[in-house]
Length: 299
Image (cartoon, rainbow, N blue to C red; front, top):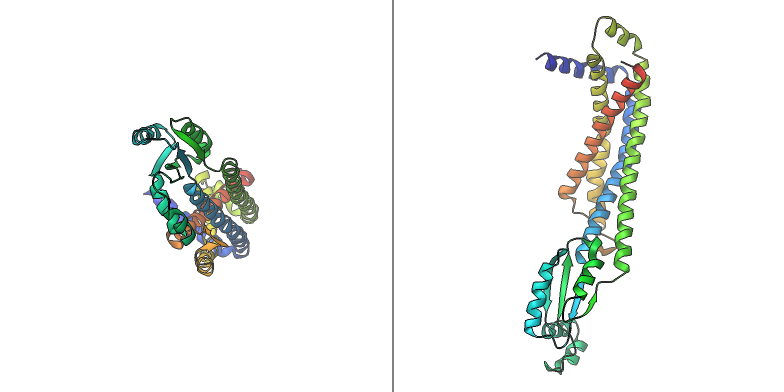
């Protein structure tokens, strides 16, 4: 009960401090708001890049063409061997007759050309379309498939796929780095802003220490004050994130430049992003206040 009363008193004191030192509080809130807006943009961008990367990776497929003389028994053995390869997620088998039908459906020209092919004259090959679990190991997996019996050719876009994966990984790292850097900048700004608030209340703190107030009771109001400033500072970024992303998504019809680059559906993404922004605001405000108290007051 004593801790609850102390916490309630700390919250009350923190709210009074925010109102009493309104100009300094407004400066802190402004710093948090501006920085969190940029953080929010970085979060939206990084999550969409990650989503786009996953979509591209899910579409990457290894195509294994079988020898022309592969029998049904060879195909059955191939299916068993594929299942034994650790990195393979799933596969689709398509015989050359099915492939001919699919080709005929793509255009009238192909339909005319393939119409005269008998089963024996069909120049196409039976094939396996294979999805992998870890795209980073797609080259290694393709080599394993190539070594299987009766496999003629394996194709997966060697070279291009690896460069594409590395490019997406670099973009993700840059986006995460920007978010982290902005959070650190926000903490620095809050520390310096709250430092001014603390210095303006040195006399009050000195009196609290003279009457025997513990370090915890002195620190807590400042930490809660930082959390309140962080919460208030996150309101505008959350509003902009929610309505801004909805407008952006609707304006571009759910994709960017081309339908290949699909944007994340707004719901529940905007709520998740907003929650992250609020948490960052509160945590950053708390850390900033705690650091200012510890470093500059030496309590």
